[in-house]
Length: 222
Image 1 (cartoon, helix red, strand yellow):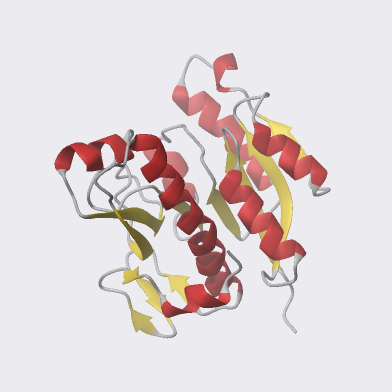
Image 2 (tube, one colour):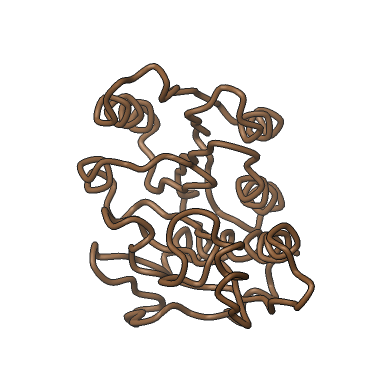
């Protein structure tokens, strides 16, 4: 059996996607080793989730830096001390410099609450409602310098109901996010998913478009 994949997670807020990853790892369904959870906010609930799981936590407070590049350098030093093979963004609400992204190219994942390339950036659920789309969802993608523009790996979708508001739609999407993110991380940990810096490959085949609602989601705990 291969060694667990060493992972560092970055969080800014509640950390519900982090909790989904921790739950899968704790249940033995996700072969990773969380070496640290790092936040730019000392009051992030995600830090409490990590502590409860016995994982080391650190804070690199962005408010202590006047320049984004200086914050990124401090964050990189914190990450590198744990020598991760993968960095997972689990609600990390900071825009990185290009230099930071390139430092971790091919080993940084993000989950975004929309069916990319639709609705990059913030307020995705209200924007989906305003646009009148029939389906909304979330995307796991590799991180590149283009905001929410890195190569997507997989997506989950949900119907948009006539009586939805941004909160009800967000809750429906979030439930599916909690299933998708552990699945994609598992693919990486098992060596099924790789990224050459330009194109993701799953089971040796190039992903020219994201997998929508992968059948394997039925094997992931709800």
